[in-house]
Image 1 (cartoon, one colour):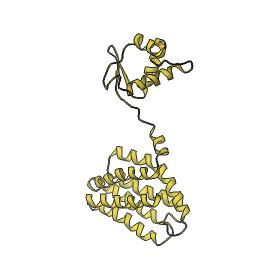
Image 2 (cartoon, one colour):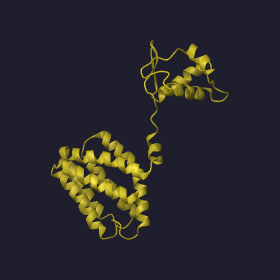
Image 3 (cartoon, rainbow, N blue to C red):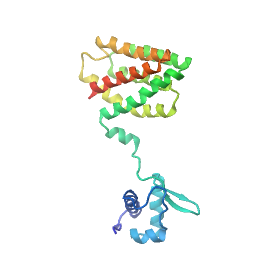
Image 4 (tube, helix red, strand yellow):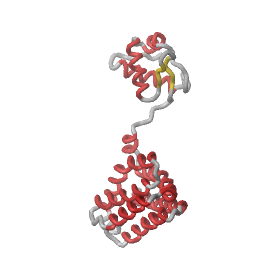
Length: 228
């Protein structure tokens, strides 16, 4: 059985313990052996085993239950969300937005309030007056999309959308910078693009749930094609 080497004993012990969990040595909900058993197996002392368990508990893999022992609560570790988004290609990010915003548009049409309507209309108007700056245009565009997601009154969807914004924002700015002509912010495409957003907002206002979802999907699918 592999044992840890000299440096960072707790980190190495946690890694080896996690590898054994992922290999299926203990199933979800299983109780781990005691420190006196795990210590010799890993080649470390009891204090190092305790620290390794604390590390894995902090990552959601293990749970220490007073008087009962240590139990497996997850078979994998979720990667840091920001890191996942940084490493993902833009197509995957847009596909995530499609999943979030299509559902959000549908819910927004069912749940929007008078306050939401005012926010969407204001953001729609500000999108027109954003000017020729790619940064300002993209920020105004994202702000409008956020008002639609906010109108769904689902905190989880809004949190997920906010997580996508930095990754998508830079990609859109880069795209507009590479296309000085024919882009939504400075060409005839502006009218069509603005109209598509106006139709989405109107569908939400009119409580047309299916239409709002479809308009959101269509727009984001075309955005994916442009960015990719």
